[in-house]
Amino acid sequence: MKVGLTNNLSLLVVAGSDAASSGYSSFGQSDLAGDLTSGSVTSKDALTRKYDLVAAISGETKIEVFNGLSVSNDGKNDFLRIKNIELYPNNKVAIVNRWGDKVFEIEGYNNSIVDKRFNGEAKSGGSKVPAGTYFYSINLGDGSQITTGYMQIK
Image (cartoon, rainbow, N blue to C red; front, side):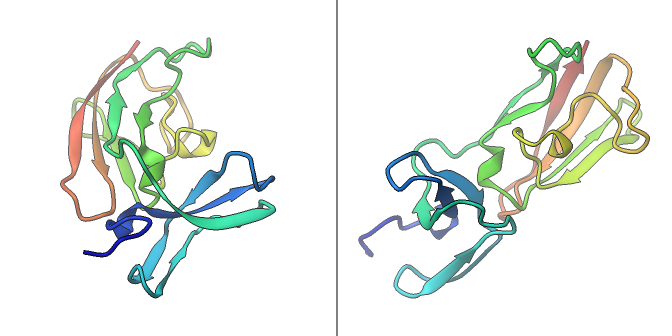
């Protein structure tokens, strides 16, 4: 058994900070090569911080979908929040209506980036979708099983 940062290479990410002693933000992982002894971890995102490093994610890594939306722009449930989705930068999220028509699809879903999350608008045309039940499919892009479920928009 190897001892070190982590034994699970998929938990390695590129991270950055503006100060060496403050918190680091993950830039994710777009490619991984090698092993813990010799290898590389890269990110699609540009490294914009003064200090950059490779870090291991600790704690809970499973996603959790908060499936209620009220797109009233009051700061509460205004978008589909998927906990820990940023840990899987190669993810693909699709949302369909009750007839199976795709209303939203994106690679690299991210709760923190307005253009990378579902806020109740159809991706093509940008119009608000009607209130109702919708179904989601989440492919984490790591070879794990696709997560599916439903969500309510009010």
